[in-house]
Structures are given as C-alpha cells and as structure tokens.
Amino acid sequence: MDQLNNADTVVSTLRQIIRVIDLQSKKLTKRYGITGPQLIVLKEIYKGADRPISTIAREVSLSQATVTSILDRLEQQGFAHRQRSSQDKRKVNILLTEKSQKILDTNPSLFQEEFTEEFEKLADWEKNMILSSLQRLVTMLNGEKLKSPPVLVSGPLSASSQDVERFLGEEITEKHLE
Image 1 (cartoon, helix red, strand yellow):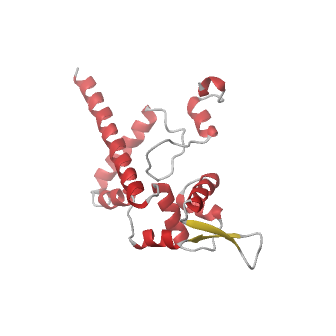
Image 2 (cartoon, helix red, strand yellow):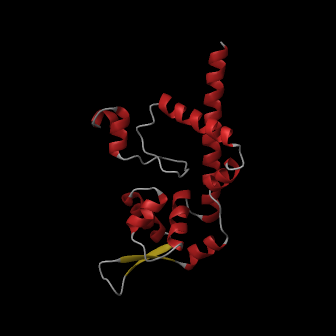
Image 3 (cartoon, helix red, strand yellow):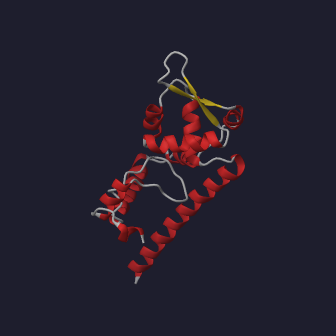
C-alpha cells in the first residue's frame, strides 16, 4: 500500500513539474508573444548575425530543421528577418528586428535559466542524487531512446520520426497515427 502511495506521489510531483513548465511557457508567450524556443533562438542570434543556421542549431541543441522552422515563425511575427550576405550570395544572415531587440533589452529569463541558478546552489551530493533519480525515471519510462535538448517547453512535442521509432522499437506505420 505504501509503495502505491509513493508511486502516486511521484506521478503527482511529475504533473506539478509539467504544470510549472507549462505556466512559465504561457507567461512568456502572454508577456512577449514568443515561446521559450523562440526566445532561445533570438538570444543566440543576438550573439552574432554572421553565423549560419547550423551553428545556431548546434549552440541551442536543436536540429537545423527545428531552428529553421522557429526562424520562419519569428520572421512571420516580425521578430527576425533573413538577409542575403553582400559578400557571399550563398550565405543568409539572420537579423533581429526592433521588435525583438525591445524584448531582448528587457532580458527575459527562461525557466531553465532560473532553474539552473537554483540548482547550482545545491550541494554536489544533492545535485547528483537529483540527476541520478531523474535518469532512472527516464529509463523506467523507456524515454532514454528519445533525444531531448536542454530546453524546457510545454505544448506539443516535436520528436523526429526517428526518435519515435527508436522509442517504439519499430517503424512508424499508419496504425501509430490513428
């Protein structure tokens, strides 16, 4: 009976974590009109406009396709624009707009930045205990097959079909899409 209660408490705690991440994400979206991943990409662009999308993707631990999709949305919303390089016509620079610059000037923090700040205050043994417990939990949920960037977001996840296939242990077919 006590073991069931512990399992229920763990599930409840996981739901609380998911809820906190969701609320933080909604707060960011409501206040600035952008998502966490969009803010991460904007902050990375701010570091230097002369970097290709592949470099930005690597720095933020997202796929190039995901960053391209995020940039498309940022461009549609007026937060960034692409400009072909005058020196090398094959190269496209990503530039921030005044609209995104105003947001970055307020230095909005991301949930993971706040978390990291608090996490770093813990003793090493406590950090290791939390990390070990979370890694074990991921294994118990068969989630170790999914790659996950160090970006906390809520809403629909966009795992690649390869990640989903590794998770399922089989090729994705029509039966999975029903």
